[in-house]
Length: 476
Ligand code: DGJ
Image (cartoon, rainbow, N blue to C red; front, side, top):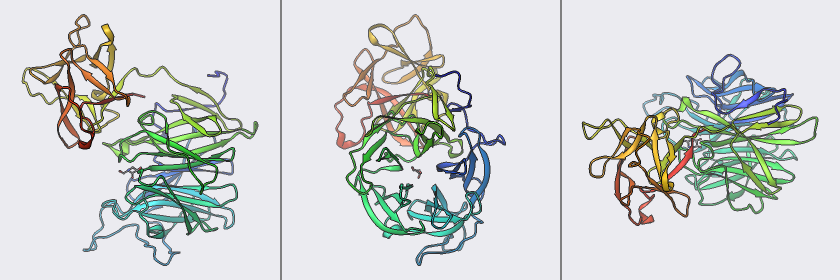
């Protein structure tokens, strides 16, 4: 790290507040650079708000500007068969409570019309069955946007989406179609207010979400996530020399949970002084148990070659508006891990549901929560590569029969050592000395399941994920 940098750091390990001290609500968003400011548009689901806009000159200090789209926004149709509903109603003319669900708003400036055009994902507020895109526009970047309606582009389903403006001003809309199986790319009309043509289907059947596009040295990159609801998964990137030409296969980006984030957008940061452009990945760290506790991850993208992209974890990034990304600090890490069950998308936790009245804590699996300390583990390696699994002052031990319990940590004892054995795919089994392994058992009910010690079995992949496999994910 260059300690002489003058600018403030963009920090990943603290909640992001605006200049009024309020949390920044701009999820699934997008940034637009205009007149020396970065304008950040994103989801804000509080009260009647839908999309909020913030601005910053340095990407660190954010000023809230306006809730640019709300349930009270003006509406005006442009398309023959769009629906103007921002507050959909059921058959009895009752609202569903919070109005339409608006996700992943993206905004571009249209040079020809001088208007700012927003495309987004629209759902009815009750479920995700409508799968429509929607449009809004405005004459000023952070003014009141006029809602222009929602529709299924070329009759397709349309969920997670992004916008991209090419060097010649042509804009493209990309969204997840066919129950998220495909990503479809559309070229927009010159005013960006309608679809001109469906131009490409990307990775058909591979279920990609959260697309974000960028171009560097004439090469297009598209990043995306897999499709696991609010849970993080392995991100991927691909490249192409022509947007509508042949795209590379998907290649991994970041770690197995994309550092506990899902792509929102990529901001190009043009260094005015050095003529260099740096690229910042912005991801949402969704909290699957509390949407409002979701936060953000900011990471510099690097390019080992013109057709390769990589994403490494950093705690802090220093961005000089005139030079771009000038320094990063990787941090020492927390030394803690979350342990995800490959079979159930649930995380190992020190539970309080005791079966045996003499024992206080059992081991269980729960829905991911970033604030739940009982899901954060220390792996202390001892003799022969075996390890103790510790949660705070407790260690995982074998209870009666095949149960697993947490007992107070005793450093001198080695009877609670576990063998972590890596599979070819990079997952782990967690085994005891008698050859049994941790197995997630029971039904997944209410985001909870139990864990027992069972003989190792050969898993039949036709039954789904292996309940004896885990993945270790660093807590950052
Ligand atoms: C993942 C998407 O990327 C989010 O925008 C949101 O739609 C959630 N799924 C809903 O489960």
